Length: 253
Ligand code: CA
Image (cartoon, rainbow, N blue to C red; front, side):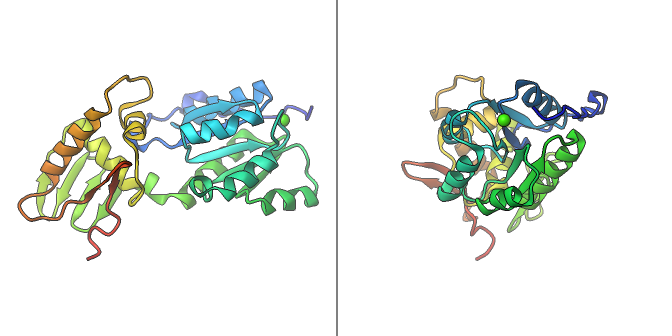
């Protein structure tokens, strides 16, 4: 066991939790329960949604069911090792560029190189300070998906402002209900990416809800009606048999 010298950042600094559509999701894969708990407390205090896994064999299923925005991955795990998990993630399309921070008790240069060679984005040696790890998480998220934390999302003549909750197209204000706003925000964060109805329900409506998937179609319909008038181009793409995406070519041609 490495010495425990983790310092928890004060929960008094708890920030206001961002809106559902904008909350980055972090997967913590760590078999030391105390450390896993400490990390999730701190990540949640920063406003992130946290999933925790303690066994290497359970990671793939979790990634398939609920793709996070970043993974904190311990090297030594029961079952599949962190190193092997990272290697497999890089071999799959869905997780090829997913940011990974590896945690390890080994600090030798050779191990560091091995960790980075399987595709980890960053590498932290235990024991580490929690505030430092939090800083690395934020830095990596900023680098990986600047749109996740930008206040304004823009595509062509469409602007969405997260602070004021205003949406404009050209010079007219677009009035959206709260669900349509979150839906648009979520789609615009990852332009071009196709989300299934189940993923949209999970990410926009929240995990706990039991709603018929057709509800998504109803809200997408309302969103479309609000966004486009007359012959204006529809920025939302329906992908038959798959789901919906924000058209990444919108505003480019
Ligand atoms: Ca471990």
